Each structure stands twice: as structure tokens, then as C-alpha cells.
Image (cartoon, rainbow, N blue to C red):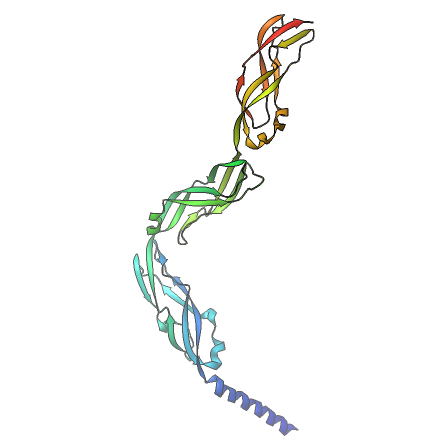
Length: 301
């Protein structure tokens, strides 16, 4: 029984050894991603275009050692200390790629980087805001405000030179209920290489109801003082009023309009001209009155 156990162990060892001879020594190709970082950036300069985050490395090596490759340790460092403003060509040095010696590097994609380096600049520009959306037919867009109205930009000098202002767009629909104003905090629409301070702005859009002018004929309300009778020459006055269009869809608004005679201090019998007051619903303005004063006959009871 003991000899059988030893033979079984020997068989396992031989099987593993045979697998290693067949698979471990078989050479295959594989592609791995290698991260790219940049060190020692020169003061006052930045890479505008051409930099990549990863490079593809095609390797050939033993199939059995593929599992030993650790993508997290594959990092290529681009030394930027000698960069100058303009175009800089960086060849990827095969000798600096950290792969085990048992692997051969077959191909690099890309095998060189063409980097455009620019000077770092700052600039202050205005922020323009717009509102775009659907609005209830009884309302109109009034205006929009943005805070702050100016921002500070930082980025490649050649890019900043082309930016004269920046824009934010509020996209919000109000098909039914329309607020007096609506506030959102929006990110700025800028090139990826350009940084903004602040990176967001407060945008407030204002709306107002559509208005209309109409003439209305309203009864004159008279309250005679005790012991006196006031007889106006006319029972109605005509007024030109301006108010929200949706208020004038029916005549219900008329119940909130009141025209009241003001007797004044002189109530001696006779005829004289008197003022009258007009109260209207909120949002309604009296543009004209006809007549301006009312002829009234004053009699003692």
C-alpha cells in the first residue's frame, strides 16, 4: 500500500512536469495595456494635445507565465523636463518597459508620441446665459441672470486666445405651471484642456404672463352719507386696463374690480364734480379712465 502511494505521487509529479514542458514552454503572443504617466512637467508649460493614457504592448513569451503579468505594474514614465513650447516628439524606449526578461516585445502602439506643448495662460471672460424650452402659451420668457457674470480661465495660451466669452444654456420646460423664476447651477461649456474658476455658475430665468389691454364698463358704487342723497350723473365708468391674458379668458375677473365714488368733504346741497377710486385684481393696471371725475347732485334727505 505504501509503495502504491509513492507511485501515485510520482505520477502526479510527472504529470505536472509534463504539462509544464508542453504548456509552460509553448511561446504565445498577447496584448496588454501599459499606463502612461508624465513626470517633471516644466513650469509654465502644459501638454495641450497628443498625450495618451495607455499604450498597447504586444508580447511574446511562455504560455505558462502569462498569469504572472500584472497590468497594474506596467507603467511608462514620460520625462517632461526638457519639453519646449511647440511640437515635442517622444519615442517610447523599449528598454524602459517593465516586463519580465522571459517576454519579448513584438510591437508598441503607438511607438512614439507627438505632443503639442503650450504656455499656461489665464484670462477673465464674460458668461452668457440662455434659456431654451417649452412654455405655457399664456406666458413669455422675460430675462435671465447669471452669477457670477465673469469667470477666470486657465489653460493653453493658444486656446484661451480664441475664447472671448463662454455660454451656459438652461434647458427646462414649463408646459403647465410657470414659476416667476427658476434657478439652476450649470457647468460651463469649455474645451477639456481649459479650467474655469468657478466651474459652475448660478443661472436664474424669469418669466411673466402675457398681457393684454381691454376696455371695460363698470358700475359706479355709491354710498350716500347719513342724511344725504348722492345722485351721480352716470351709473357707469369706462376704463382701459392691462392685465394677464389668461385672466381675460372669461368675465370672472370683473367681480374683483370695484369703482367707488369718493364724496369728499364738501357735502352741501348742489351739484359738483367728485373723484372715484378703482380697485383691481393683482397684476392689473388701469391705463385710462373715462371720465376722470363724476358729476354728482347732492340732496338733503
